Length: 244
Length: 244
Ligand SMILES: O=c1ccn([C@@H]2O[C@H](COP(=O)(O)OP(=O)(O)O)[C@@H](O)[C@H]2O)c(=O)[nH]1
Ligand SMILES: O=c1ccn([C@@H]2O[C@H](COP(=O)(O)OP(=O)(O)O)[C@@H](O)[C@H]2O)c(=O)[nH]1
Ligand SMILES: [Mn+2]
Ligand SMILES: [Mn+2]
Image (cartoon, rainbow over all chains, first blue to last red; front, side, top):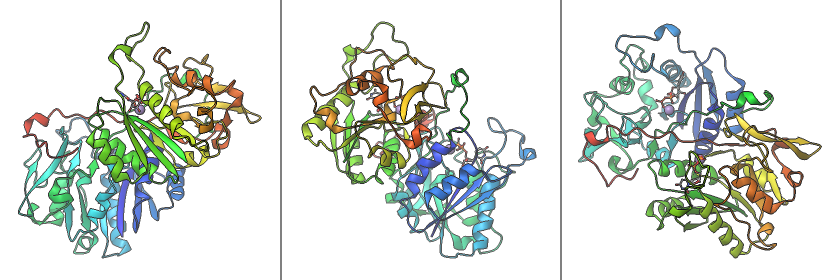
């Protein structure tokens, strides 16, 4: 089984983004979709999208606490996004007890080739591959020499132990059962979530298993959906019975 | 057969957009995908994406002529996009001679539910449904009374005969065989392409066949992919062998 872990939150493009995401993951066999809403209650919208998808899944929710915002030195973002949501999912997957599965963090707005799901099934401990459209670059990727990750094609904080995006790795569920369940922390610096998490799973980047022809193929794109202009919305009578 | 007509052009997010689009249309049975590049030559990138998709298709190309730009009164856009590309596809489909098919204009960056493809298969002449994220509104839609389109939930140029988006309709291929093949024109005003085209197919909006529970369900979203920040790209050595 692949556990696909998707944090999500209510916004105008949520239904569109999830519809498109579902059209991709519908092609993936033997998967379980864990969706965690950043909200105080589960929403009907997500319940419905999950049910209509036909994909076996679990709907969870946890609101990012207000007080875990504002740390020193943070700029554009006030708090890490998806931290509590992914932690909840990790605990849930650990509790489900499947020790022969793969876990992948897949945001609802990225673009995924179907091939990335085939590649991640090969994971023994932690697989890694390039991600496009991150870090101010066309792509970031591990550089592989003799089958091992030796360097990184990354310019933003390359001193991170694992300078790589959330969408760039998958790991074997057995790693959830070797002690404390690995977690993300609000205490970490912005942009250091992936590195902090992977430090709990591995001893060194050389333990990573490069996928996608030794990390030369782009299989995931960190796309973002443009904000929608609804400036003219007020000119017409609202029709709240239409679900967007 | 559904002929899905997709104009496209080379850009940084093209492969991502088409990958995601293919993941959606791969679910559609009995379709033929016509892709028309806005270029002087067919590209290897599109050839490869089409081949890998496994979807039966035809790769065409035609460059939007430079001199069909700048008409009086045009603002943000210098010329209609996709005019020559869609015209080429219409002529090609007419030449293929299938008189029992459906034709749908589907840009590569929109979001499509699978249900919209089921709905369009019911088309006798021209089907219509709502589209989200257009015209500065959450959605635009036809308003249906007693099974007929009587008005439009539209605020931008509502005086158009058919004030509706390219992604909001599909038509029966028999309409390509009743005389001159219907076409788009660079002479029309910006935003009037759909209306001008539909005027060639129908006598009045009441001839439209409303789909999606009388045009109350959003089945298509006019999403756009955010431009990618690659400001840091120059900081690292270029790796032209990596296909983004
Ligand atoms: O208030 C928020 C904003 C985002 N997210 C989730 O955190 C992840 C990253 O968010 P986003 O895609 O907006 O970030 P970006 O792509 O800009 O890094 C996504 O799975 C979101 O659904 C969240 O849980 N709460
Ligand atoms: O230079 C261009 C720009 C766009 N298009 C095509 O015209 C359609 C509309 O373009 P776009 O999606 O950029 O427009 P928007 O969504 O902003 O209306 C799409 O199918 C594009 O692939 C084109 O053929 N040449
Ligand atoms: Mn995102
Ligand atoms: Mn578009």
